[in-house]
Amino acid sequence: MAAAAAALVAGVACSEQTPTSIDGNVLPVAPVTIEVEIPWEGFGSDLVVLGGYGSPSDLGRGYVANAHGGSLQARTLARFGIFPRSASVRDTAGTTQTDTMISITGGRLVAFFDTIASTNAGPVTLELGALQEEWDARSATWTSAVDSVGEARPWSAAGGGAVTSWGTAEWDPADGDSLSFVLDSAQVAAWVDTADASRGARIDLITPGSRLELRDVALRLEAVPSVNPDTVVQLSVPDEDLTFIYDPAPAPPPDGVRIGGVPGWRTVLDVTMPTQLNGPPALCAAVGCPVALEPEEVSYAALVLTSRATDAAYQPSDSIGLDVRPVLLRSALPKAPLGATLVGSRGQRMHPSLFGGAEGTRVEVPITAFLRQLVAGADSVTQEAPPNTLALLSTFEPFSLSFASFYGPGSPQAPMLKLIVTVGPSVELP
Image 1 (cartoon, rainbow, N blue to C red):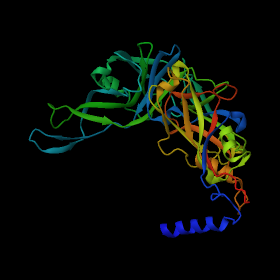
Image 2: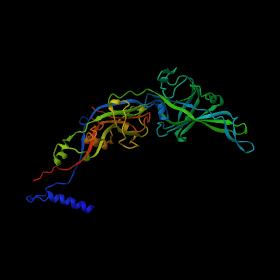
Image 3: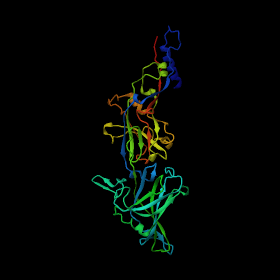
Image 4: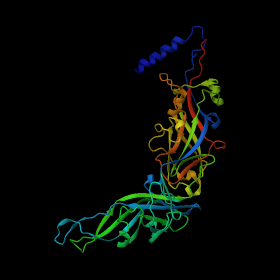
């Protein structure tokens, strides 16, 4: 096949030569590859930042903070399900049986931390409190215990209302990733009634200046079985709700690009692909300008963003994944359907330093398939134009309390469109 293809190319080349030509290479065949950077004004428009995607309860994690970044306050709220009413234990004769007459004598509330995402470098003190007011995990905020359709109820005091303190504990990341609050039988009994909408735990950070991420909160009970009163068994209670409340809520950025956070932020923009290229000079010198592009001539396309320092309270402490998807119906925003990811399931991974000390770093987000569709234009059969709107969002939504920031239009670091195009020189027959 290779030999046949070579022969075909040779035959075509010979058929194009003329007997009067003095140049044996009348047809230049070497393609030219050029990198092109198009400023925002040449391709972008209608950038808008939208918020409100998801809620803290969707995250499945908790946060606690005390004046982190000078302002952030956060508290974790947890509620547990039905207590076990029996246990499988060995009686005094060594026979295993199910005991339905167990007596709960106490327990522990265990908080598990993400040591990478938490910002403390040393020991911190946390406090456990018992909530006293009815609350809704799905809609609770710093000021509202319930904020759902048809019902709105504020806390008696912002930040979770009145609580009964159940003690403090110290967590040192050098000693492990968890801490325990010891509970007595009366404290455990306060959470037995699952019909009580006020039951629940509130975890506060007492030490100022840090933000901690809780991977999970677990309730472990200690019980004495009736068939063997000298034995203590450990029982787990399934968690029912885990969420967090925080203050202040970040305001929409007056300019720039934002993704991530809880509820999630998205940035939406329109992209117009130039039908012709009139530069750079290297391209014009090689093939002449203007150059009309074909889809297959776009070897690579990327949206180039420049990172910007995020507000100190919400700066990422762990990597963030950036996802990019076409918006299939812009008129339906903010709930418009999105197309498939352009960057893969893991997204474009970004180090947290990009939004702190390493701000000003360029991040290239590949959008080659999207750009090729724009170059191709309307479908030849349906006559439908491809979507020209992109949504920038976190890989999972919501993903983290932190969010990523980039410079926007109007800034010297405004988004750019980077293209690598491969085109052939024009051909003139003698």
